[in-house]
Image 1: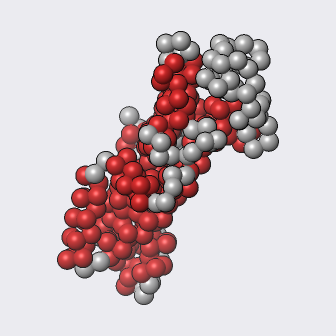
Image 2 (image 1 turned 90 degrees about the vertical axis):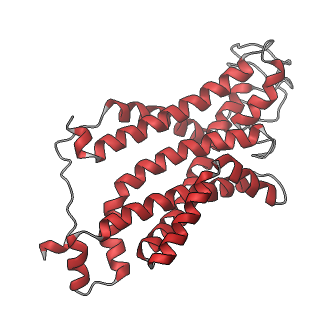
Length: 283
């Protein structure tokens, strides 16, 4: 019976890397800010609470925009929107991609080759371009349409990786033993395949999260993301580009927020990769 269990490396003696802690701290800060916006904000997002393009002050920590709205309030809402987009897009991409990847791994040769070629063609197109096409095909630009578009765009990458990982697991001896013992394919997928490919997939999901955040900011900058009064960082950058020399905080602040979240996600992904890969952690 021991042959039916998939081998799992022991992680009891392994420590979390500094990159993982740093990434968790940066991402955790944005998560706290995003959750805080559900209960409290310094000002109403659409309220004109000061003069136009004011500098940083006690009343407005990051100043105001060209309409007199508080920039710090918009930055906080931007954190929530970025997290919504990242989580939603990754969830949709994972659901579609993992399903297609598993099906491709079990499919006949001609169907597997067809799916693999289709995925390669989709991956050749930039994620932002696919997302723009999906958003353009919808009636109006909205946050939900942007999330769905990015999830669909990212699903091809997830599907290709899942297919490769699943095919590697399928040739293992414990899969043969499970099939010989009469285990059904759904049971093999749930008990043996998914637990063995999940560590690598989780790292990829973290990277896809960062890509989704950047892509949403790009869509909002182009006017295809979350419409007003949603304070997306990309839309803040677009509105501040005309006053970047007279009021640089309007462009610098959302840029720093965007970069800090993406760097945090990348550090978190790198830390997860090191923690789940015994060869890397022993170096």
